[in-house]
Image (cartoon, rainbow over all chains, first blue to last red; front, top):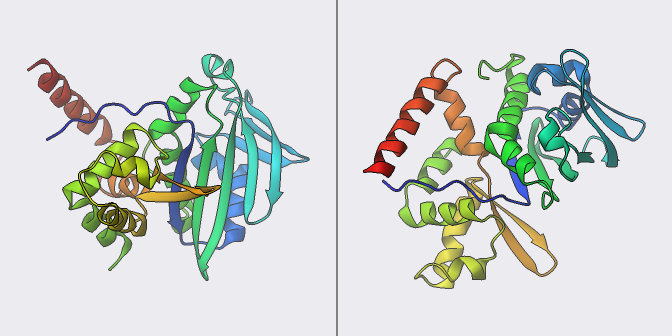
Length: 152
Length: 106
């Protein structure tokens, strides 16, 4: 069996999954802190007034970035600075795009693109490991079953 | 065929796994770049990529005239999450790590 070498730092990362939910439900789960706290590492995330702000469980600031595009319930683009970790926070900002596309009633394809990671190799490695996969898998589980995922 | 069937079928072919390995090493490659590394016709690589795309393991994005291919790890992650929970994960990870360490030093 061949062993795989660790991936090089990817400057664009793409994650795509189907979720049994309406676009509106998925949108709400992305921008409503009551939802995000249940699948996004316990972060309360608010998207309003052109900012995306994230707070950790003790109220510490985990993120505060500009919203670059907002077209509910289809498309959200915002900056990304890893404020939850001082070493990662020192890197350049990158960009996150959420795309929600309804394939049939109640079934959507969610695509997350994290790009412009050229100046943020440590952030790229951090979100590229289990990072986004864990968050997106938890989002899917929460929307489809109403349960918080048992992993993590 | 359900989504998982498509994923397992796509993975049950060594050329397709090789294509995924190439994208894992460096994502966003074009068809021409991928063809350059495989002894296979352009048509052959295209049909394998189509199976991978239909299974959701590869996502293609256009940028200008070029089509770039990205490895989408989510289908494999969702299969992982279905059978491996948070209590099994550390043990499975420790064993996998032990295996690679022993094989590296061998």
